[in-house]
Image (tube, rainbow, N blue to C red; front, side, top):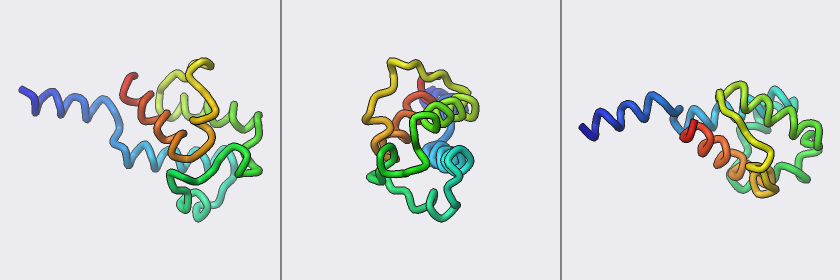
Length: 101
């Protein structure tokens, strides 16, 4: 029975690598990052305040695109500076939202 539940959970939420790949594609599309810059991002890579392309308007565009591509809703009170400080923080947000949708 647990294998069946695990299989259903796997189908409901995208795999971590799929979330990572989609998030990198979103950063390329929204911020205009090159494929190389997007691929070079590590969990510790700084985002807001480190990438000149990521200004306050780009944050709104980024979150909207995440909602669209991951089929999630991100409430304003769910976002804090930690989520936008590093790539790892943004990835953790995407993963958490995909699991709870």
